[in-house]
Image 1 (cartoon, rainbow, N blue to C red):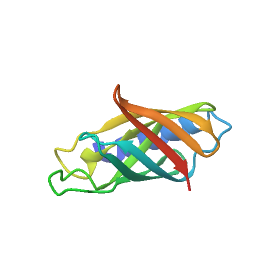
Image 2 (cartoon, helix red, strand yellow; image 1 turned 90 degrees about the vertical axis):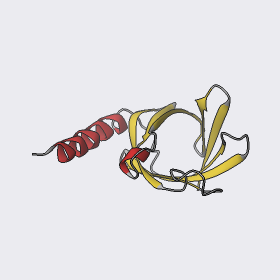
Image 3 (spheres, rainbow, N blue to C red; image 1 turned 135 degrees about the vertical axis):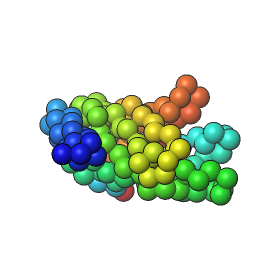
Image 4 (spheres, helix red, strand yellow; image 1 turned 180 degrees about the vertical axis):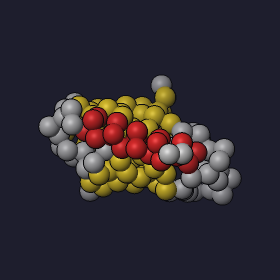
Length: 126
């Protein structure tokens, strides 16, 4: 078995294990708004199902080839009070950085978190 299928299998197993730890379902489509690096509010869509999914930010400029790509997402931790996501942009385009965000459950329709100390993200269930 080559490396890629092994990584995909491991990611699926980790995601299913992570999702099994909570009674809250995070599956569905989420509208995200977050502070962009330039300070301008940005929008994205997160789709989750069974601990995996996609993240796609709205591209406002052609200067960043990594923005606007539909990137794979893995839920690495899911609990009743929130979850941790990893967005794997490097799997879509070589040179793009992957990132991770810890999200806190505010209510059944809202998650909040931080990309960094000064950049926040809010997700609303659609």
